[in-house]
Image (cartoon, rainbow, N blue to C red; front, top):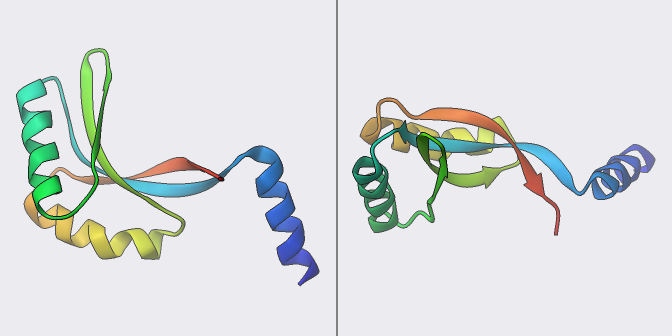
Length: 93
């Protein structure tokens, strides 16, 4: 219990924890990024598309573990063959 509490306190002090997100699209075409965004929304996901010149990235999810992310990743990978699982920082609220 003490170790768990120390981990919780440490993560709170950093303001984030390490986790994963699924990147369904990455490329220079805004139309393709928007199409990926629309398709994911129609499937019930809440995607977010970002632009970091010159690359558009459409990602979904904020997963705490790789196992948790793999559940959705396998479904996404079937529709987006170039999808990848990406390490990310998840904000603690």
